[in-house]
Length: 340
Image (cartoon, rainbow, N blue to C red; front, side, top):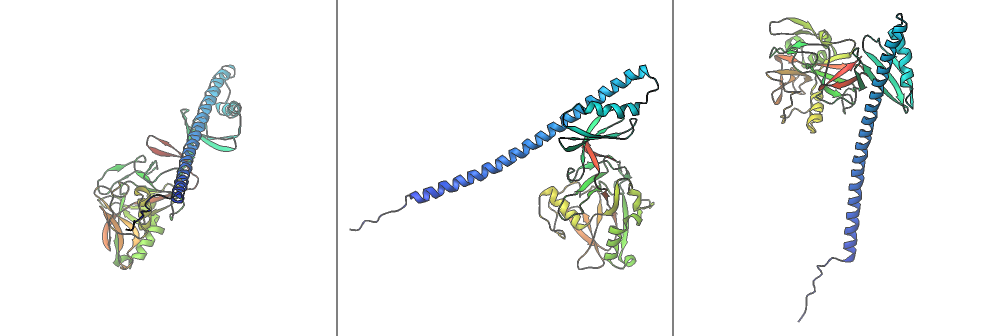
């Protein structure tokens, strides 16, 4: 009679390999966890430094203000601007590691105070009321969907709702998104104008798209339902904007990916699964500056949860504002305020 021997037990070699694999996985987990902790510590540390420096700036401003009133009693002819520019750097230089203090702007209006602290540059905005805010570059700090104060108000051509500089413009490009312009760009929250595209007038869609992208400032637009004409350049602020254009299909998909963490391709026109108010506006549809790949007489537009094409439609136009480089701002009350 033969006995069958079973070898179902774990050998020492298998056990050792299992332990090594577990140790490697544990090590990787610890590395990732440590990196996350370090990132949080650095972020928290940076925020602490910013808050501390802002407090120091506020204290220096208060000291100079007090000193000015004391000096004014002695010398009624003293100039407040000159006194501030002379005494404020002295007060701030009492801080260790602070150097290269620069002040721009008039004391009666907005002032910018810039200095280096431990060889890193910090910029603060001081309002005429004396309120201090820490400023950062818009590029890389704004997020897609953020509201930005941009000094152009308009009436939505569909809902007739008035959009102001505070609620009329949002970020469509943070300036660092893959495949986009490299500039911070804003898009209108509503639909400020309509543009009548007719292939008989423009011969083909490529000509229409070229005008929407490269000649938007000179386009004749309807800014309301009663047919009032306007030019695209009426929505451009020369001090803040380099260029004004319109949204393309690839812009739409890049921004959609950023918000929804999806992977739509630049030319994707498939059904849009998730709604976000940045793209889908109440009672509206609007052109995308992109021509149909196979039909030279059609360009795309966004309607509800779909991207369609047409060649004879009085559709809305949503301008895209390309902001100038190196603009700085502060995030207050749920929106970004640009400091020129």
